[in-house]
Length: 146
Image (tube, rainbow, N blue to C red):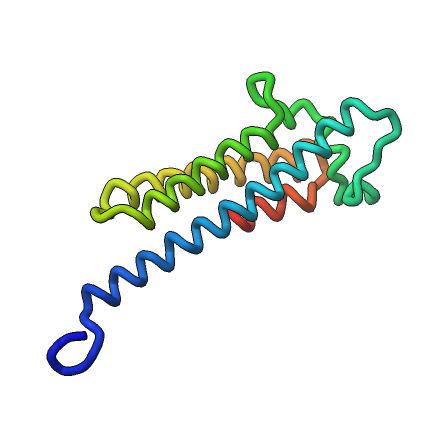
C-alpha cells in the first residue's frame, strides 16, 4: 500500500501481469488437453478400421474426415502432436512469465506464440472449411483457445 492507504500502481500492474500469465497457463493446459484428444482420434482413425470418434458423426462437423485428410499431418507429424508441443511450450512460457522479474523478453515470447497460434489456426480453419468442407469441433475449440 502507498501512503494514502491505496494499492500502489506498480503492485496493481504486477498483479495484472500475473493474471495474464495465469490465464495463458490455464488456456495452454486446455489446449494441451484438446490436442492430446485430437492426437488419440488421429491415431485411432488411421489404425482402427471402422473407428468413429464422438465428434465424427455429421457431414459438416466431422473430426474423423479432418483427421483422415492429408492436411492433418505436417512434416510427417500429426498436426495434433504439433499442438501438444506448442501448448506445452506456451505453458512453459507462462510459467517463465509468472517467475520472471523483467517482463520484456517473456512478453515478447508470449506475443510471438500468440501470433503464431493465431496464424496457424486461421490457416487450418480455412483449409477445413474451404478445401475439406468438414469442420472438427475440437479443432475449432483450439482456435478459440488460441
